[in-house]
Picture 1 (spheres, rainbow, N blue to C red):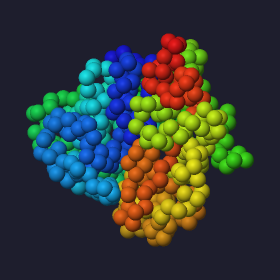
Picture 2: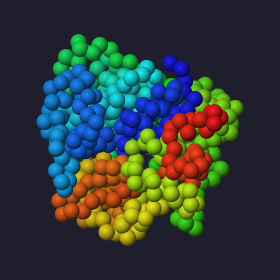
Picture 3: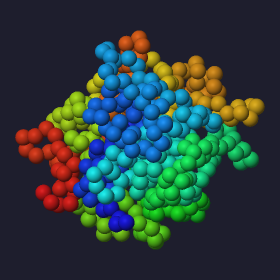
Picture 4: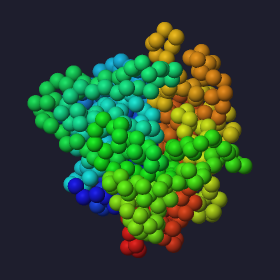
Length: 476
């Protein structure tokens, strides 16, 4: 398969949805859907009446219709109520998830990739976070059933993924060794996934699946070498992200130091030596600030296969960001009033996270203070080892008393946000609680957000993916 020159960043939750990825792929570049929390999003779409019928159309192509019928019976609401009731929530992940949760996750990822690939023959990718380990195998399998071509994973060290992809291509049972706080080298906590137990007859019905290309997201030569040495299967290349990229950033190397605004300071140790990356002999793409024709040429001259671009696509007309939010942000960008902050605390993962400073969102201290802590999705919960050897789950963004009762430390809860709920709100799916409270959004972007005005034609207030691609390739 031809290597893409431009990879559209995989932006969650649901910002890089099937519609955006499909539009990019149809132009001959690599469109990427985000698999992060996609089961929750599919539930919300079905409960909102499945506008356009896209979910049901994709579900009708899933090879096991008993599974899709169960999902439709449980979640599809043909005529949504007003006012909107709370979205149903899937069970939280555990080491022994119910079959229905694996089934739901497989189907949701199938649907997203199927729709992104519909009507063309070009490549489509799936983006996941290694921090979200428990849904990973079901997510990968669902995407592979739909024919996904690339898998891109960041926010961790995904050494287990290549071997899992190899086995899933043959519908074989797989397991994932989980990161557990307090575990020792002798401990081996795993979650298991068996496609043939969930979908009997899948081998006979489907045959061997195509194993997608695997591109881990890295931020150092050391990590690239470690992945090559320790990975359980083939790595097909790397995406190298600078700390100017949106979403989660790798922490600075060495002791954490903050600037006068409380943002992590990055230094020379955080600059990747591309000549050493080139010596590894694998294709690589550069992300984070590579949003101009000059930067594309610079990347190619450095030996890269191309670039990854997220923010520019995340704010185009085809992205799934809530339209009112996107319009307000573009308005501030055009007025030169927009700022993006690298927040060292807001993400429960402990990774720095880029936050757009926008009134009415979680970036506003008053909005943050008025949100009652609640953990009803649990995507970013930590797994920890109890004294008796069993495991428990906790999240620094959950109610403080609950977190402390689960062995957490008080110092870890300050300024943590529920990214699960708040990023879903950014995509237009805010949870409506029974007491009437509506979850506010939190918006992320790379540092390049302040320059997206360059894609907007005079007299306009929005832009399309074609405007971005024309600019990046010098076709304007």
